[in-house]
Image 1 (tube, rainbow, N blue to C red):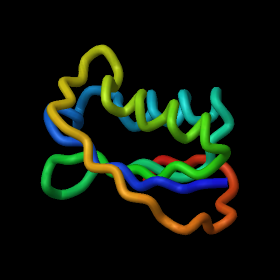
Image 2 (tube, rainbow, N blue to C red):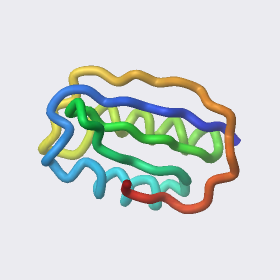
Image 3 (tube, one colour):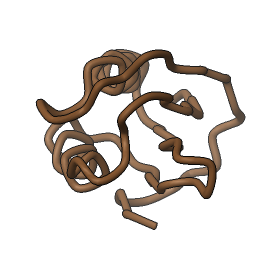
Image 4 (cartoon, helix red, strand yellow):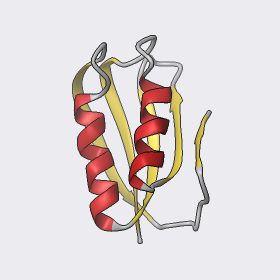
Amino acid sequence: MIRRRVVAHGLVQGVFFRDSCRQEAERVGVSGWVRNTGEGKLEAAFEGDDDAVQRMVAWVRRGPPQADVTSVDVADEEPCAERGFTVR
């Protein structure tokens, strides 16, 4: 079990990023959350098995079709046994 926090920069708000992220996280079996920040970024936390979390980090680097992700910051965190995936 691992946990990663990501912050995506670029055109990441107003492009259905959060809901698309929720759908993808549920598809691969990752827990956590996603939210827009006040600075125009997207922030998410993914928790689950290593392969599934890595897939989500890779997905954020692309984003949904309408997004234009210019960079992604990734940080390891301690898992906290989160259940489900929510849009904040």
